[in-house]
Length: 151
Length: 198
Image (spheres, chains in turn yellow, purple):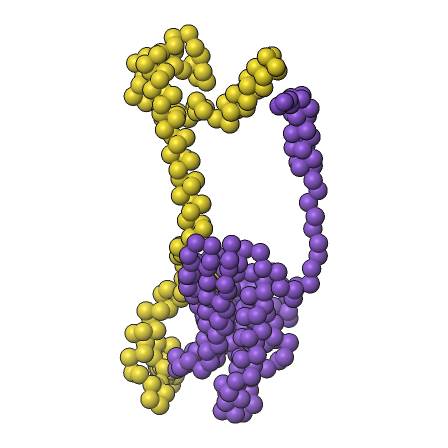
């Protein structure tokens, strides 16, 4: 009995010792010469975000900026002017329709005849602007027609 | 005096438009080393010149021989990190970085390990093998090769333009840093300047 007890105690002691010894082995390895004793604080910090820190390896991060290039800036200004002009014409055409208000004229979704009382939001829809390339084509055709008629 | 045959005139215009519309696109294969500059932006020639410069510098400078001396002839292991494009154009560094990687592997002077998304895929495959591959062929965890150096870089540009003239300057910098000590062991750079006249 005494032998069994002592044997049992011995086994339990060895297992406890192994467990106790293995835990610090995992958590705290012996320091190498000149190694910072607080290296684990930093290690734990980076181990948490390890995946996100390495996700961009082998990639190119695009942090581009817009450089001033004279010709491009000029082209952009021209395009902006065109857009502004288009917007002004569109606004003018709607304004004209508002004042003239053709009740029977149906355009797109039934504007502007349908537009009474809906001035607040009707411009939110995108309708064909009053002056487009085909207006120029129409004008040209009319001019040519007139020319052919009276030549 | 002034007489235009309008139908004929319209006919000519329309046929010109039709001919223009039907004009076939012509594509010609060219040599990859042929220098063709169209817009003045970053192109394949710039990428190739950068790769050539970097490869020559990386494999020819002292860091390599120093490492081998210090480690008993062992070749350094490199992992490719991130390259930041801080220029004014969209530039993908992979075109010249891949050329560098290829030179590392083919010359067998530098060992290369995978990083980023490809490494994630590798680990995913290894994880899959733990459940599906036979025990004898299953690859084990924890036996990856740790890199000695990380390759990182940046691309910068300066643009000076007035009216129809423009000077664009690109500077590509690549650095090899010791992963143990954070010491920068090699810096390679390629500077490209272009004069563009519109």
